[in-house]
Length: 210
Image (cartoon, rainbow, N blue to C red; front, side, top):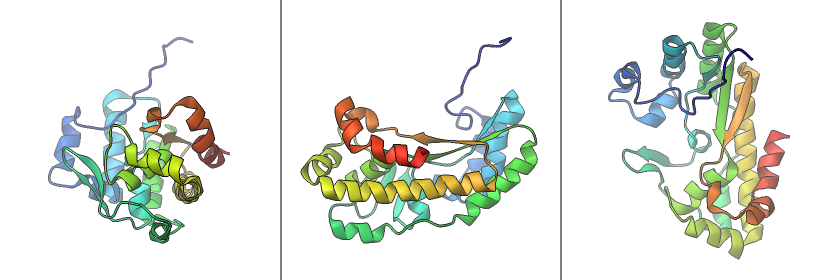
């Protein structure tokens, strides 16, 4: 291999002046649902650095927003859910996701612009989405999430199954529109011991990837 492979976890972001300029005054979630902005932001690091693949500009919680969850990304805080998940009745507020036309359009625009450069799509994994829903926002200890997981495994699995369906649908939208590969981001799963991960989380992520 003539070159050492390096993967940039974040290709777009505050490090790029052109990113800061195009995002000025536009909330994060709004920018994720505007195909023109998603296209421009995704292409910026490709133009600047000539990377081997583009990473679709989105956010971990976009699938939840697309499914109708009332949430916002608050500056200096992160994703904040208006009505945190606590009971079985809350499952009714998580409808299945079938289409996300803004994402479909953005991926198609990008594939046309990128040519032979692959596009990598992504989505938040079920555990991380569940943690935002249950905690109501970012949490360092995931206390409420663990309380639900250990205290009511039946409800926990029902929630994870619903979130896995939403995540899978969100990834399929990207693949069907032309993404070359997709990945799951499970930002908060490190809060669990390996044994609990294998029992309560891995089956749901594995079903998405399968």
